[in-house]
Image (cartoon, rainbow over all chains, first blue to last red; front, side):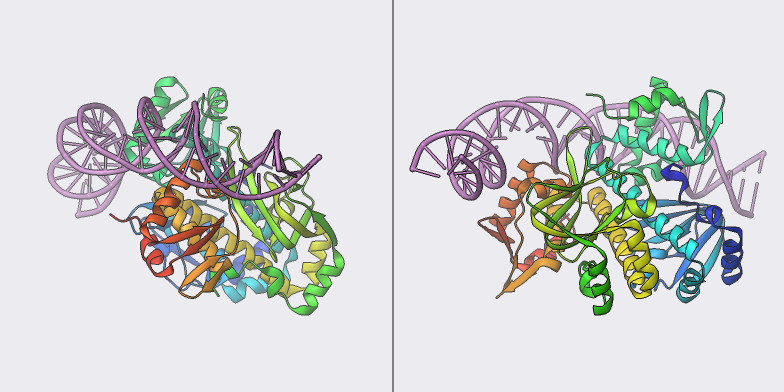
Length: 226
Length: 226
DNA sequence: GAAAGTATGTCGGCCAACTGACATTTCCGG
DNA sequence: CCGGAAATGTCAGTTGGCCGACATACTTTC
């Protein structure tokens, strides 16, 4: 199983465990632009995203935002602060209408105690996320902006790509600003790079969706050409 | 407890748990320059550093190395791959003569099953490390090299600083290259920045050790001046 | 204690990418 | 279906920090 598929914890849980989990928590609905929680808030709950899309991002004194984690249906978020204590350091910002399962710290520890298989899954998810974060760091340090953007697109397509004939169709919409916040660059540079990649034939853009011409892309993203 | 103190898992474990853990694993000795494991190796063991210093670093195709984690006595490493499966993606590179406790995956899961308090600790450590990684990402994206170096020094001093009168004495030796690999820059730039900081009176350097004039430093590192 | 290896200090040239500024296009709520 | 808001496209000016190259200092090893 590729790294990118491991984080859908709800899907990987056994049926009984999932039922138990769902019956424990309470569902909440959010619409676009709202926050599930904000930096500074206490942080006594864990969340499971059932539907929609949430970005976990850290604001900085300069006003710039960094997106640390893009959360899709089936994934878990908000665990770090619960396990570790202390308030939230990140925002959980809702990108599109979403449904979220909310569990208190004690509900969740109880669940883990009673369901050791799920405990193991949680450790896997945490490990997987640590690897993803490490990968981002390595990218930031080693690669130029163009390569970072290509690798991001490939990473996303591993989990959210739909094969359409020869190409891969990324079925999520991202603004250039969001891409910039994920790879650590500016909106203008993203715009420029994307049209450059389009010109080169690596991908095509249609009403805010990205189509990847996969073979060329993989070869090109293996490293900045030098 | 500050973030930087949470990772000394051996110290935080109860006496009985620690005894149990130590009796389970086997001790190994390494000298400077050796590897506890290398990227590509299978990855079926967890390690606890009893003495010495180990850097967890990820090599890249360009030859550059990124230090993701500097491991000190009492800390745990190599868990991510064990929990998550798959081979090592990082090197564990021994910086100075070290002693390491080695446990197999099954020994470790057994231990966690029998010692729920320690399980909780492990989750805390993982969460803490995720936060640290996130912090590094935010630094890389937002701050210039000078600020990144200052923040690194402050982070290290929180865990390894010894108060000597007015100043804080960092009792670990780091080469400029290692600092560069941690903040994502080049050796030359580190040399330049350190002497700039020295000129400004933020810190002083004596035979490869760093002394911090704390008050000025904290103020300055809160953000790049603009 | 000499030689080899490793770490530090310093410099000029150069380019990727940021900044700010603006025009245009697309989206979305009423 | 219209008007404001948000997203995209483009450009010239500026610069932080990389690269390469070299000299000096420290520190192991035999």
